[in-house]
Image 1 (tube, rainbow over the protein chains, first blue to last red):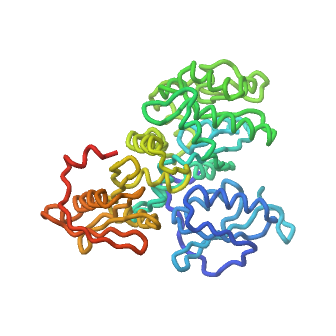
Image 2: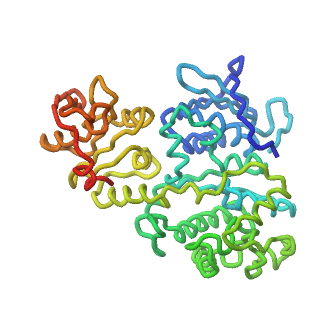
Image 3: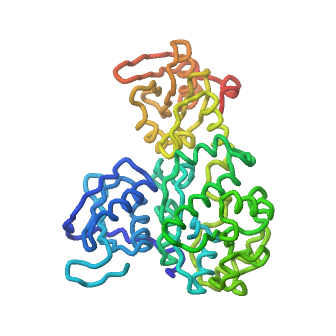
Length: 102
Length: 339
């Protein structure tokens, strides 16, 4: 259980991860981006990275929470030209054969 | 399968079962009427991110369980407009809402091979949907007789199949009832659940009197309305005036609302007072010239020049611009039109 009153980590990634797929949710607000992310990631292979584009800043809190809930790795985010790019790595058996949570 | 809102009760219900070693999967239905979702769509700059987060996802992360967010907006809207068990004080169809969500949960329970459904409902907590007879009706109508467990009040309720079969230890379930939340708060402390939204009657816009009045107006005047889109958000934004059967006016109350309304001006008339502190006034419908003067009067009334005898107002629709010089309307003239 995390302590009460925690604040989300909003630091941006220093490097852009390589994405296997891109999902554009710009213009949609909660919970649509999470629903679309969930549907998209179901179609991907474990270890692959999904890049999600959004202009809803609260996704900086919701996406890490969803990843933790669903067992996927939240890699981090970048902000470019008013859009937020979030990176999620699908959990499961990755390319090196290591079994990930879920 | 559990209905997880992210509030304290559903979080506790999940934890009580998890303490027994039961694998829990969360469901959260996106109805299009969550006021938190609507607030974030407007996006006021001062709003702290964690106050606008999706609480069901936060609860899932804290509990370490997956919570599926399931979009149901269009289907759900039919029970809002035609609830079998009627509305509550406003447009909230509480009993039908629970039945709807539990029917959906049953479908997912069957599809995923789960054994039963649980909720955070507390006997006697809510007047419309949580008294004993309502809880029984909801269970029966949802097709979940014997398979719906309410861990927080279970020991006040008849034994369910999960308890009879020993999947769940009834002795470790609770006997909370009534409107006081002392029992839940004490349990939260014992289970070290440190973070949950403060109880405030939930985040359903349908329980809100103003939102409900505006939704009834939309339905009465057959305004195009698609739940789960910005149509819902528009009902939360600004001051609303019905100026004729076919024309409604939305007046932005601050910069964030003006920015939000500005996203909807394509193909519509919108009004402002240039070179002044002015609301953006968005018009739904096609006002004739006389009505446009009336709307210009509304715009002037809510501008920083409301004390002046006459004010210049600009009305715009796509490439058309119209300059109108009008007197700001009085509140007495406006009040009959307020929604």
